[in-house]
Image (cartoon, rainbow, N blue to C red):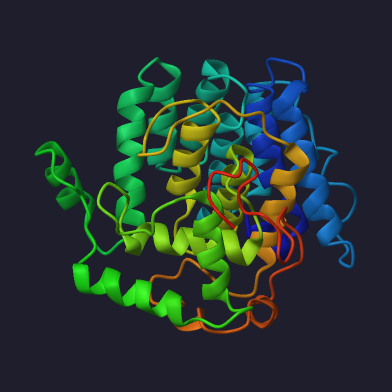
Length: 343
């Protein structure tokens, strides 16, 4: 989604147009309902964020003739001239399928047609096909393996092999876990680490790396994103923080967002946490995407020593990383609306 910050007018129209193509199931149904609301919110948010730039009219108004699938695909080929912009468009279109209130076979079929027409080899599109053909559990397991590989230095093949033997795909060494706990305990008031401690107290969650949870290398960085972006642990905010992460990441993020949407929007259990079917807020999601894309640093970069910032001031770190104010949890606010843990 970061393409929408710096791309040409045509590419902006192309990416939003790709989402519109899915919302209309390849120009076969009206542009209305929750999918259309998501596209509109995303377009308006990015358009507002680029208000100082000349983008040649509203991105909500399609260029060219979109009345049939062939005409729409032809227009998308013109608007998206290179491999990178076409890949970004297919990713955006994939999100549009996942964000529908129910599994959407017609949208999935349009996504596959779009990926083929633009020459994008999309593993995610293939997973969506499984989801929409009543293979959600199989697809979900595949998504989860890709997510773990995306967020660690362990290959997909090794993770798949371990899971096939019913082993933990990734673990946290005891000394690494103990060092992390000691670091958190030493962090001063007002620091990122102190806010993480409040986060764990409010939610009642165990610290990442605890047996039965995803490892510190995967979940620790995610919990940090909650703190930096200011999103709670409600089901809706889990999707919002995943959107923030995916839009911010320069190398991946899509599989994690897909896992979260499956878990907390489509009620498919993929992790130790209980799944749910939450109703998404298109405006909040679009804001999360904008905030992630406009953050001045990739907070998912695996080469980044994120533990080094834990003793630093949360307010100062947010400013240094150029994180736009927003989210749902103010300074000193509650990270868990259900009050599962202690203050």
